[in-house]
Image (tube, rainbow over all chains, first blue to last red):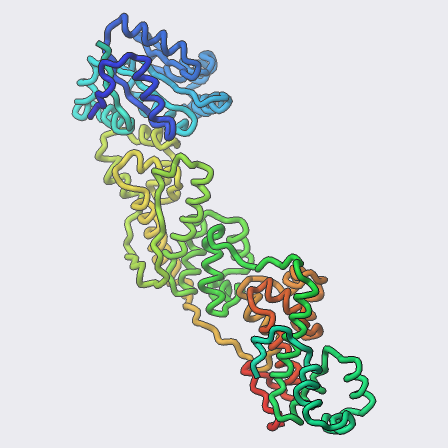
Length: 178
Length: 396
């Protein structure tokens, strides 16, 4: 796995807007690796919230993570998904709901999934499905702390799903604000 | 007689007057006797400077002067055509009837490259293919997906001697273009052009062609160590649908192929070729022996008892897949005009010849010449009109 390191030592704002603007034609999913320095991360998150076109799904260490966090954190009403999950309905309705919500938007959103170290890898292919379903409507940006890079890069032997996930993501950038 | 370079064409009667009647120094009565006409009628004709002479009079003149009548008739037609063009200058011309090959790839190539040059009608093709005419209509009008109708395309390939792969490729290209208009972002994943070969030998297909679904399963899904339903998620479908593709019960669509390109290293052309080859081999195994379709050969038209109407239908309308009545409507007449044209009730004059030429992409003189041949054949009592146009007045 190779990372583009040209944005090392840039500010978040500058690097992020450049990375996104390079990819507006085809809307490929992007993986950005960031330094895990709390102050910098807070500033980065503030910047993202200030952008109108960004929908942030910030994954965290909590019990709900094993379910489809991204859908919960995106536009879908949590009670809707919970209700569906209780009934053990297939994944399909939630995706259709998500797609219709995205299509209703007047702009092409940038869906940013922060803290990817908490991704539930059993559900990785569901995320890939969402990416594929929305490939013409929204851009996905995955953000991973730098400490987890080695874990992801050496995933071939440990977990093939991770390796496949990385293969599908076309553009990978390493970003460490010093 | 060369009149192609005439700057200001003159009427036939004027031409005869200037070149034969006046230089001869004979009286009009003598000329009237010579061309077997009554003197008052002949004198009236000369006085009125008639622009159109009947075929009978022209024949009489030609016989007397020992000149081929075609030359006189052609001169008259040429004059009338010029008069018509001067009179209707700036008038909007009809659009030529043709099938746009880019828009309808399969239909265009079928008609322009196969049916027209081979003189085969649509009905004859569907009879050879052992399908009903409605199947043919449904196929072209509804633009069915190539894969749903692969059997139809393979039959067509056998009937035309090209092999089914050629038509499957064309139909796939047509559908792919339509798909890419709707999903332009897929252009980089789904780049494919069909090979341009007409002969069957250019597409050697083995009978035991591997099914793409089995290949995907054996070479990619099983070695990946990723669960089957995860793959189904990735391909944006349920596990059942993916099972159907792997079993060969369902055919890969372009969406699936684009995701295959994303997931694996192979290009779209690899998957499309694989699928098309498999479908042809499937047809060869399952249906080919049962149907026993023989290839059509080029048909020569029997002109023995033909007239202008038959030539119009056989050579021009049938290859265009056009009924005479529809053609009649197109050139601005009533429904019945088509039937009248075919049966010879309506004669082709300058105006109709112009419309024919505009609609069918010929010259107006072509139609006027055909009409002339028919007139001459009738006047000379030739029953079996040939298209060679050799009418020897002396042989009569």
